Amino acid sequence: MKPILDNLVEMTGHRDHLRLEVSVISTLQKLPAIKCVRALEVFQANGEAYVRPRTWNENGRMVTSDWEAPVDPRRAPVADYPALHECIGQRQPHALQTVRRGEYMLWLPVWLHDQVHACIEVTQSRPFSAHKLDVIQSVFLVYQNYQSLLDYSERDALTGLFNRKTFDEQFARRSGVPSASAAPEPAAPADPAAPQASSEPLRHWLAVVDIDHFKQVNDRFGHLYGDEVLILIANILRNSFRSHDRIFRFGGEEFVVLLRSTTLSTAHKVFNRFRNAVQEYRFPQVGQVTVSLGFASTEGGAPVEILGQADQALYYAKEHGRNRVCYYDDLVNGGHLHVKLAHDDVELF
Image (tube, rainbow, N blue to C red; front, side, top):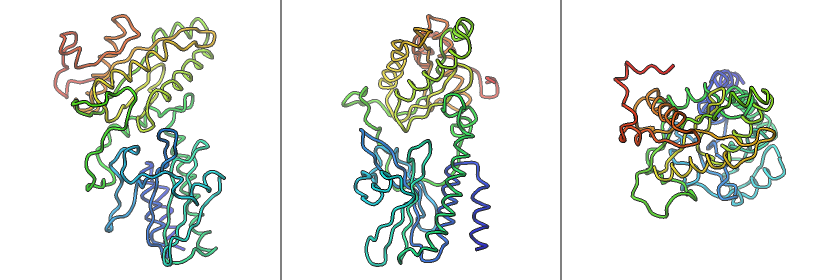
């Protein structure tokens, strides 16, 4: 019992979802007769639920998949796992399945915000006894409860989007669990705005979004309607981007979007599609609201520089008519903006 308690202490000492996931896998892997423990990601693609291995132990070291979920070659429809599919559909706490003699599987879905986002898969060499199930489920419940606490601390209370602290931690992170290096560079997930064939390179893009004249909304209609505008903008953001893109609320009327693995032309289309969706939406009492957006490639330098470039493009958009999307490199190449000085001279905050 003491090794399990020691592992629980270590597990709840983490302040990061991935490290917490690695820790619960390591804890369960040490139980007798356990052959393999994996963390599976559950996600939606084209209206169908899929599952794919995200973190597992390989040759004595913990690895995490470096593929984007929708194009991971290991992904499979949840329907291919009948026991797991039924477990999720009926909101059961776990599912058991005998694969073959000497291989017995247990799935434990991880619920957050009334949805399954992940699943812990445990394989062992003999059937699961009632006592073994109790031990595993107890460890799992500690893990799931702590995941919920971490998720709450990472979210903006009003909109439910990731907060500024989470952005700082995720975007600036340069180390972590080793990736599965055997996998080739993943392709970009399909996007309806993307051309069928393109020679453009796939990149990540960082965009800063600001609601135009938001102070006037608060002054004229009051903060309750202002908060409603923020919540509705957050909903439009969720509907405008893919599940593996990341959306953050920086505070006030400012949001940040991390658009992953797409071309420059598609980034322009996706960001303008979002801008149009806001422009065409009729906000209760307030009426029409517009947004301005500036974006830059994440290959442009250190995190503070990239954020600064997107910010410069945003302010150019706001100073030149608002309700528009501006790309930092286009503004620099057109002579509208000048590149900032050396890293030590960048001062944004």
